[in-house]
Structure formats: structure tokens, C-alpha cells
Image 1 (cartoon, rainbow, N blue to C red):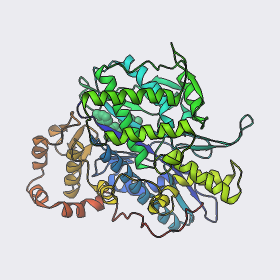
Image 2 (image 1 turned 180 degrees about the vertical axis):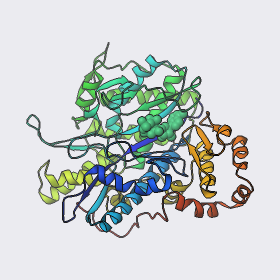
Image 3 (image 1 turned 30 degrees about the horizontal axis):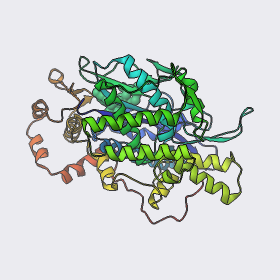
Image 4 (image 1 turned 90 degrees about the horizontal axis):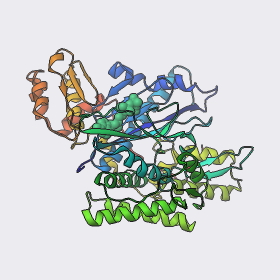
Length: 497
Ligand SMILES: Nc1ncnc2c1ncn2[C@@H]1O[C@H](COP(=O)(O)OP(=O)(O)OP(=O)(O)O)[C@@H](O)[C@H]1O
Ligand SMILES: [Mg+2]
């Protein structure tokens, strides 16, 4: 596959604290957060002009699904834009609640486990050819995903239980996976979900749904996560030998690996020896390097991804994590927790440290601990803030998201009733002219002009507007007046919440 479509769905944890009374329960809080969405789109399931989807399912985990991207940096930008859009909604909820007499602060967390131990996801979507051999896919991809947490896990301080002392684990999600592959998402939570909803021409494509990943705060970790997975998928698709790392017990392995931060835990490879996660990842990295040597790099970040992949494996293998403490989520957070524990003389598992673990994932640009570290230049980034800000309003330009974005902002600006999903675009008054875009990689289609022309002359006026003018109009429609990013010099130390 020359170009691949990527999308990521993030479910956020929410909580309301710090007021005079007990905070609102999460379901009521979620309703406050989605109030402007409901008002804007008359639904709690809307597509917004940057072509992404905002969604509140039953329960209390607001979700943002990025538009389709074919570029890794676009994907990360759209995901980061989602944090800011959700943050904006959380701030509005806080203000509305204060007016209603519920004081306190709203916290929106981009993590995967709440303090009661419930888990929520960060789902990756990769378009793959329909012809991909599924058995080959799973024998290669499962061991990759089971061991990928040592590269891109978000880290978690695991509280003490009767059997185990408090300790630091690579992953948030590992303990919440129950199956290797299946079609269920909630009940049995498989690593790879096989539900067949391609959002594309089903004869040509599948949408691979990976639900094992942790939500990442670090743009660099995200780049490694999506970039390495894409490389492994390329090898699967090309048919080259990738080695035999099929695991005897993937679910036992994913937990075992997560809870051993020394990286020395071994897992049994079917037809093979006991191996560490580093052994398996090193084998895959070697083959990916060979694959790129023979076939060429398919995008500009491939070498950077290899370098990060290798450096992270070396750090885990040596036990010296200092070389990745600016780049990899679990290592950034571990350094922070260690420093704070040493400074304050706190034992492992102290409630303050558990709180700091949560605070790392707070998406508030000036309060969230990761964001404060970023504002102080203490973690690496991949994107200029302007690119993230643009992604709040503008869809990616190289996929059908561009068409959806144009349809949405034009229809909104002209007050034309419409419905959309990933594939369909319909003006309510013109149901027979509905536009179906089955190719997610097509960013241009004259049929959209034909459809929009049904809206009359005013479309021409809109088309002639420059981007800045369009943004002026689109921003209020994208749910916000203005979004501001953290100012880099405002804060002295990461706060504890
Ligand atoms: N053809 C495609 N291939 C890969 N990803 C796609 C494709 N079409 C859309 N996507 C991405 O898939 C994700 C779909 O998100 P959505 O939340 O609607 O997922 P879902 O699994 O269909 O539904 P739900 O969350 O309701 O269970 C988005 O991030 C989108 O960009
Ligand atoms: Mg979803």
C-alpha cells in the first residue's frame, strides 16, 4: 500500500473536584461538557469542520476521533487539536456549572485508567488492503503489539495489592486486555478488533482496529507508535519474511511484560525459546531496517523512527533510561515520579505520586503536568504550536477529510441542513444527491462541487474567500471562539494536583 489512512480515537477520563461539595458524578459532568456540542449539532455525535468526530456514548468518556490522515504528523496534529477542543469544552462546562452553583474544577485526562481501575481506550485505525492475509497479519502483529508497550506505553503507577507491592509498569492498558483477536470491543477487549467496518470500499480495503494502545501525551512517542506500527504492517503486506515471534500466550505475556520495568521478563515464543520484549522488538527492528534498505523509505520520518526505536530498546536493555527521558511517555513520567519521590521523601505508591501520575495526563495547557514540562522545554516535541492550532479548524488536506471539511463548513456557513459520516455527505433537502466518498485517499472530487452548487450562488462567494476569512467563519462553528496554547514562560515548577 503506497499511502495508508490512519485515524486515532481518544476516550478521555473526566472528573470534577475541589469545590465545596462533592464533585458531580462523571455522567452528569459529561452532559455539561457536551452541552455546547448538543446545541451546535443537535446531537452528541457530530463531525466538526476539521473533519473529525466528537462523540459521547452512553457512559462518561467523551471521545474525539481524528479525521483520516495519510501523514503521521497530520495525525499527531489532529489528535493534539482534539485535546484543545476537549479542553475548551471542559472549561465551558466548568463555567456553566459554576453558574448553576457547582463550584470546583473540571479535569480532563488523556489516560486509560481511572482511580477506580476502569479502563478506556485509545484506538488506532490503519487502512490495509482487503487481500492482507489475516493469519499472517496476526502472527506478526500480535507479538509486535504485545511488546510495543516498552517503546510507547504511557507508564502507570500500580497501587499495592495483597499480592504485589506498589510498582511502576510500562502500560496503562495491558491489564485490561482479555483476548488476542476478536470482534468484541467492550466485553472481551481484544488487542486487535476484527469488526469489519472499513469506512471505505469493502472490496478493496479493511480498517484494522487496534485497541491495545495507551493514550500518549508525547508527540515523539506518538510518532514512534504509529510509525513503527505502519512499518510492521508494510512488511506484513509485502510478504517478506518477518521472523517467527508468535507467542504461546499473548495475554499472559502482555501483563508479564508490562509489570517488569527492568525489561528482563521473558515470554515463551511458540516453536521457540523464551525471549524478552527487547529481543522480539530488536528482531522486528532489524527486519524493518532491512526492508527499508531494500525498498526505500516511504516518508521523511522513517530514519527518525528507527533511531528512536533503537535508542528506546537500548535504554530498556541497559536499565539506564536517561537517553529517553525527554521522548518516551513512560520514561518521562517515571523520571518525574522518581524526582518528586526523592525530593519529598515519598515511598513508592504514596497517594501524592498516584495523583501526579494522573496529573501528567491532564490536558489543561497550563495545569497538566506533561504540558507544563513541555512549556519548559523539558520534553521533545514534533510540531510547531501553529500547526496544532491550525488542525483545530482545518482538516488534513490530502485525504477525503478535506472534502468532508469543506462540505461541513460550507453547509454550516449557509445554514443548510446536512448529515455526514465517514463516507456519506447529504443535504437534507436533496437526499437523492447524497455524495458517497468510498476512497479515503481521494482529496479532490468534482462531485462535491456539484453537490455544493445546489446551495446556489452564495457558495461562489465562500469559495473566493481566503483561508483566513474562512477560518474566521469556521472557528465559531468549530465550537470555539479562540483557542490559546500554553505560554512557555509562565510557570516555575510542575504543580501537584
Ligand atoms: N478507511 C479507513 N481506514 C482507516 N481509518 C479510517 C478509515 N476511515 C476512517 N478512519 C478513521 O477511523 C476512525 C473511526 O472512528 P470512530 O470513532 O467513528 O470509530 P468506530 O470504531 O467506527 O466507531 P465507535 O467508536 O462508534 O465504536 C477515525 O479516526 C477515522 O479517521
Ligand atoms: Mg470510536
